[in-house]
Image (cartoon, rainbow, N blue to C red; front, side):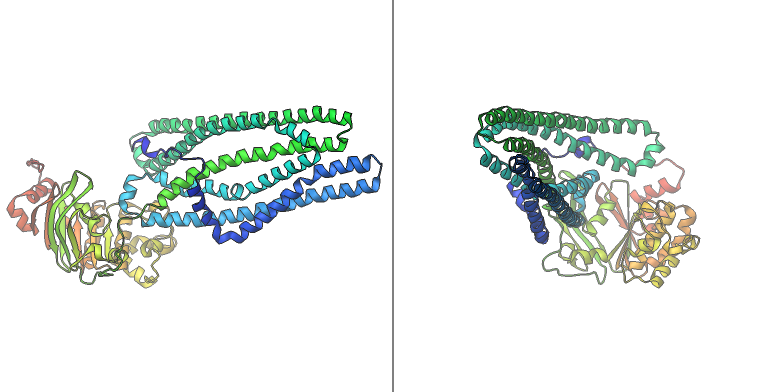
Length: 597
């Protein structure tokens, strides 16, 4: 997998009204909490601008007159204002974070639901690491927007507005002196936004690459160790991790530069206030209390601006993440149930491929004009060299992909006219590489199907001889098997897959190389189980081991996506065609012509 597949898309606009309106919809179920947080923010902002004003009153009214009682009252009001600010700030943060967590749950559930609905072809083209980033890192970025941005930004705006109003009420000329440094502040902020935007894009790209690389290599760790690739993979991860470090260091550099510059601009404004305000005090046009209040308000004036700059970064991250998340959510599955299905489940189990042509990618046809019929209860085997199109037939039958030409009929109904879930539940598939979920053996056989009780579970396991190794486990069917069944052997996993298929009792059974990974002793054990499993079911058996299909009713021989031979075992051997050659390759120690010719 090439590295560019893991890159994130280039960021769009720092603010997109369309995306923001869509994001705000997630607040609607919690609009009561949002309104309550807004009230807390408004109250907290109002109280936060009171202390400097109380300082002015204390100096000009009570300290000058040595009025201890009045000064005490002001001190009490000062403490109450600080306490009120703390209480409202705490309440605001609690409500917003609670709301943000609930929105995160909703959003992750919506993304996961969409991932479950998307076609298999979507996952062929999108790395797992990138999709994991959508559900984790991107949702976290939106959580920050809801908890620290979209509503709490009003607190900074209200605080700024209150300070500006009070400054002009105190002395408009001195207020203008403070605001004279604002153009410099805007210049610093503008340059910061440009630089941090690019560094943020690099960080996001690096995170996506790390997630994709880790997923791919942890999954393939056994292959890496088998071929002694640890040092090579470590070197690759070092480069990817270093790129992430460099991007973060660049971002840290800009933040480390920006905030001291912001402090410098703030200090410059305070110096102007002290100098110009001092002249006003000398002239008797400004009280000492007002000057002290001006100095305190000047210091507080730049805090919300600093917070707004930080919220700009949060907004930018949220816009980038929301664009990627909504792109995923807007991806519609092309394979869906029809509005009015002609059938909801398979009843008989007949299968017909009628002139089917299919390609995963344009111009790379996998199946060419394939036609065959499988009668109800018939056992049909499909054989051929690797890449002949055997597994593709199963994917098309289960409607993981749709054919480009021709049609596939089950019980005389086109698979496109079936209710999708009903069709797939009627087809039991046992793959060569069995996927087991973390959990117990019982969970993996039932797959949370409440209709399969303990008796059905144990009967299925007994039939396929899985019960023999389950009895040796400490908790038997409740034994945990680890991630992807790590505590089980390949053969034991296959036996559980057979038990699962039997417990679900499908009308159509597909064995896709289902015994190719099983040792000879285990294969002998399950031959009897297979006969019981296949009895009364339409079955399609794909196998490299010809010994497993000699008793099939018919055998279809595929070559380069075309059907070359159809017949039973002895008939095909007498023809001495492709099937005969495959048989010779497996069972005769002799040189035979290549089947590619």
